[in-house]
Length: 331
Image 1 (spheres, rainbow, N blue to C red):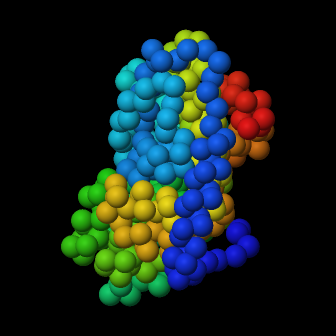
Image 2 (image 1 turned 90 degrees about the horizontal axis):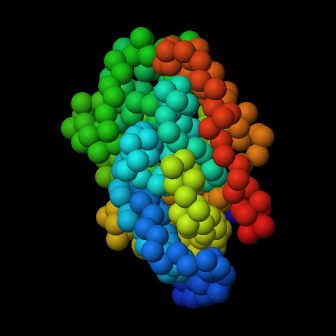
């Protein structure tokens, strides 16, 4: 957990210093690979408001190769695109990566990011009688299948002796879930990201539980093994991972600048994004793979099999590619 919180007023007072000092430091840290990558184009999956504006805001966007940004709103789509050779790099949670391992998809996991778990939450409508997860029995509960929301909702239900068979579970995309929640078609909603924040700020949603204690906080970066086998594109991925690593570290001291860049893409008000950051479960980072990361991922796979979500065992270990570990640890 972080050690201190900043108020919105403090953020606004510090805006100039945060923007100028942090951005300059990030730009100065940029490094260019020794080989010529000008002929390389990386097809990179992003979520609205994440990697693309992050690299721009942190001064890391001037890459010696081209990036073809492709926006997908969940990790399942990132992995499907990689498996179909339509994407070189993507990201998501451990959950789609479990299904990928079970299906023996053409994908590898090359690094992990650590992000906010308080913004992955189970929400209830402001006029609902729901006060705890135990109140979900018989209620219409929205979630996003094969994502973190699916996983932590299952864990939270099991904790109070319930399962998906005890609720009216409705699988919806994040955008469709927000519309359903706004209309009153859902009693509660397990959701992540800025859609959850919109539910809170625009529709008065109440947080029943967050994902802290249910998720590991490890979000794998997915890579195309065909790309990893191509030396120039592998070098470009290594450079991009380092840029993202610097950018994730930059976030923690420069969130107001990042929030402005996010807001331009997502339309979520800057103040709301700052409040999310102030309430974060931990600082942002991008790290190399270690044994603990792999063990955590295998635990998720084993849990999903016990829940009956998987049709058999999934061994995730062979899908973790640790060839970028030394590069990221040096950075």
